[in-house]
Every structure is written in C-alpha cells, then in structure tokens.
Image (cartoon, rainbow, N blue to C red; front, side):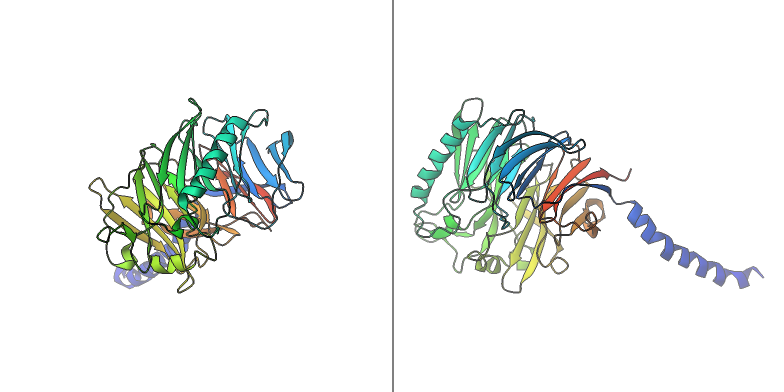
Length: 397
C-alpha cells in the first residue's frame, strides 16, 4: 500500500518545488516602492548621502534644483544650462560628507556648489579650469571628440578630495589645501597620440588607494612605449600616486576584464569609449560595462585585481543586455550589484549566487538612464526622459 503512494508523493514534491522556487527567488531579491517626483526630463541627478534630498538639472527650466523629495520643498535653485539630448558624461555627485555638490554639464564644464546654500565654490572651478586648459595642450590631441572640458568626476570617501577627468588625465583637487595634488596620465604613451580624446570614464577605489579606467594595451617592447596595434582596450589600474600597476590577465578574449577590446575601441568615434566602471566596497573588485561594435553586443564583467597583480574575471552577461548596463552600483555590503539594464528596468545581480541576474521594472511608465543611491542603500533616485522617480528599497534579511 505504501509503495503505491510513493510515486504520487514524489510527483507532488516535485510540483511544490517548481511552484515555490520562483516565489522564493523573488522574495529573496530587493523590493522597491516608487514615488514619482517630477514628470519633466532630467539631465543630471544625485541623491544626498542621507537619502532625503535630490539635486537635478532640468533642460526645460535650465536650472539646477535641490529639493526635499518627500515634501517637494525646493531648497535652492541656480541657473545652469542643460541639453535635452542625453550625454552620459553629464552628472552630478554629492560629496560623501554632504557638504558639496559637483556637477558636470553636457557642455563638459564643472561647477561646485555649497550643498546647503547653492553658492558657487569658484576657487575650485577656476583652479580646475586652469588645469583643463594645460592638459588640452599637454595631450597634443589633433581632434576633439571629448570636446574642451571634463568627462567624469568622483569624490573620495571623506569628501575632502575631488578627482576629475579631462583629455585622458585624472586631476585630484584637495579641498583642505586648495591645491591640485595628483595628475594621472591614463594613456601613458611617450609618443603623440589621439587616445587622450577617447577616454571618458574612471573610478576611484573606496579606500583611496587606486584608480581604474579604460586604457589601451601598451607594448613596452617597442621603442617609445606605444599602444599595441590594432588598438585593444583593457582595464588599467593606477595607484594613488599615478603609477600604472601591473595587471596580468588571461590571453583568452572571453576571460578578459574587457572582452573583445578591439571591438570596444572601434566604437570610440561614435560613443564615449566604454560604458561604466565601478569599484566594489572591498577596493579589489570592479564591475565593468562596455560595448563591442564588432557584434553590437553589451559586455558586463566583474574583475578582481589580486595582490600579486593577476586579474580574475567573471563574465556576468553579454547577450541579455545588448545596450550594456549603465549607472552601476554596489551595495555597501557587496551583496548586490545593480544597474540600469534597458532604460526601463533595473538589472539586479546577486553576488552570492554567482552574479545571477534578473530585471526589476522601474516605476510605472518610467524610464531612466541615470541613478543615484543614498549611502545606506535605502533610497535610489532614477532620472531620464520621463522625469525622476525615487525608490525606497527593502533588502531581504
């Protein structure tokens, strides 16, 4: 009698697994409750470290606005011109100490504001502009794909240093001394090269020890330290003093931090080279999003720079997100890696589950191309053509 029931019990058990497993998978992922803040297009967006305020740029009003997103009370506004054509280099970053807001417009100009009053910190702006002019001459570039200005910016962990990128160089400004302390040449060639024009992104490790950026593979065996031909884009690493670090990775293209680096470079005259690069909280692991123009595919990897100079790589996705995830963000506990996958969804990767990903739709009838997270990861602001939405985030326990 018991033996007759065993097959039925097994069938029921299997069905329960099939039914319950998706429910469990969904319940173990972060949940988002969305609030619509504005309907108008935003050009730049940044949420305050405590998640209570948002600063954004509007091409409709040509104002940079600081607002309490819960009460919708406008704290200050300053006139600042923005284009209605999205430029992924335009951005606004709040300093981690909450005192300053640095904004890079689509005209590639940098403005620094007192976060409490909206007052310009002109001394910083003048100093950075002076260096940008010097770097333009120093790069000796013949064309101007990146224009005359800066293309990226990052704050250090305590908000006392601002690193900006122009013409293939990183410049670090120290607010406590009011001086430029470091200049990093991301191209590193001893011969004239237009490569300075094509580099747009970098990131600064949370512990302040390293920079990472898209970089042309160098052939140190050739006279003058030239780039390998045909040009291949790789991930470059520098210490805080600007010295290029040794980074030994697999020769198999699929196992590289930037797979198909030659294909990535072929798109450099069409779009800014690469898509995004973001350090994890451990300052050893980095998420890299790029796009190959050979097979028109998005490439998304996670790479770890080990103490011995070797690099190990995890290919997270190449086919599922043809446009490559943008605006990548690691949660502070390094359990989740989140980005904007297709403009209208968040891509959420579970680090503990071998970076298994799923898509979470943004708020109803909303799409965006830029996101900003509070320091505790409890709030995320997403901006784009359809305005700004703020998500309250609940992580699984």
